Image 1 (spheres, one colour):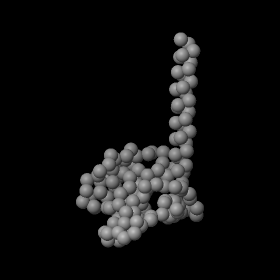
Image 2 (cartoon, rainbow, N blue to C red):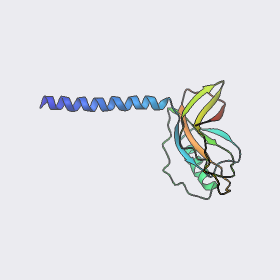
Image 3 (cartoon, rainbow, N blue to C red):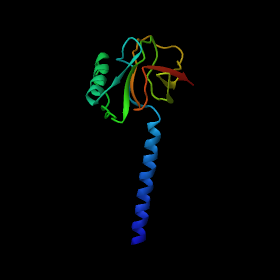
Length: 152
């Protein structure tokens, strides 16, 4: 019985260690909290979100600009990270929704966010879109501007 209990305890401990290592790895990367193709501002730019209320209001406001109610559950504000709302600006065709952040880095007070390059599938219906996304970065990152880097 003691051996079974020890084995169970060892399995539980190995699971908790694996999840904490994964958590540390996630802190070094940017994490997308929300991303949509409509509702963003006409001009590219960013805003740092300070708390849960501002996060909720930003998501609701961006959805309402496109005439919709939020189609997602409002994520929990991450107090140990900086949360950033980024508007990509206006595009005249295609789906420019950001689905992945490949890497993030800061150099000379600029936060560089590397995302996959948008690839058009050929002819597209000409629809104006204003994509936006909300993401988090480590709280120790100090920056005054954000720049997207596109990569394949």
